Each structure stands twice: as structure tokens, then as C-alpha cells.
Length: 253
Image (cartoon, rainbow, N blue to C red; front, side, top):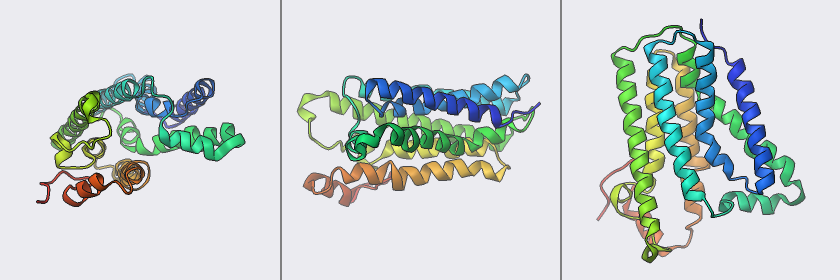
């Protein structure tokens, strides 16, 4: 028996609607970032419910997704606790004015739910292959995903430690993994998803999700949006000149 997309899709819809209602109550749309990772756990859970005898590839996928998601959601919860709505969502709230209720539903929660289902193509592909067993390529994919998860976790931990030091307030993190990449956490995220995509090979459409999340991290909600915040900052401009934006590399000079 293989899983179908219908149940995960309805589960994600219900989940995002509940998140939206909670956001209305809290007046904080940025809680969607906390819920992002756990939405993938929900997708995996609905597939496992439909798969009485999962194969080793499916079990491996479920374990890696859970590891990635729980770590990420926990980190974002701790990071955002007590800080109020993230600046990006606060800016949209101000821009949207009286239309914020329905626009937040459509442009934040439902949109992210749809993106979640697209990014999850490795999960869909793996769970639509009944009883699939892991071969060398899938084990390599699992190793790549684990490297990405660890990279993202280390980068996030380094940033959290840096921000916990009062003397660093207003300063730019430029040590640890951040010496070699301006966004090592986003790089780790992308690597994790490409590894998960490898788990689903040779099903080629499983790589759509990794490609989409990489594009979003580079061009939409990640690097581009965050660096716009530092426009005109001389220290950050110098950091840009010597440090790779995404793929870790030795700094210039």
C-alpha cells in the first residue's frame, strides 16, 4: 500500500488554518515560521498512517525530517520568544492595514502551506514507493541530509550564542561558520533538502522541492530579504566584499 497526496494536503490545510486563527489571537503572523518545520512532520505522519509496513527508505525519510523539523521549530521558538512579531511580518501588517486578516490568511498561511507541499516532493516520492529499501544512493542522500542538518544547527547555535552577549548588540556575526558564509544556516537547509531529494531517486520530480527551497532561500525569503535590512551598513558592506553569500568558502583578504 502506498500513500496518496490527498490526506497530507487536507492535513496541511487544516494545520495552516489553525495557525492562522492562533496568529489572529496573538496578533503575530511570524508564528508561521515556528510552525513551518512541524508541518513537514505532519505530512510524514499522514503518510506513515497510510503505510502499514514502511520500507527502510521511508523510515529513514521520516527520521531525518523529524530531526530537521523539531530542531528548527524549537530553535525559532526559543529565538523569537518574547520578541514580538518579526520585522518582516510587522512591515506587512502595517502595509496591509485593514486587509491584514484575509491577506495574512492567503499570502502568509495558505501560501506557505502550498509551498510546504511543493517542497515536500522528496517525501511524496518516497512514500509513493511501497516497501522501498535503501541502496547506496539513498544512504549517500541520508548522509548529505545529515550534514546539512548539522551545519544548519551549528550555524544557528553560533548565532544564538553571539546574540546572547550584550557587547555584541548591533554587531555583525563574522566568526565560526559565519566567517566562511554570510548565511551558513540557509546553506545547511538547502543541503539537507538536496540530501532528502537523493533519498527519493531515481524519481526525478522529487528534486523539485529542493530546487524550490534553494531558490526561495537565495532569492525570496532568505538571503535577499535579510540583506536588504543591512543596506547602507558599512560593516556589513565590508563583510559582503570578503565573504561568500551562501556556499562556505575561504574569505577574501
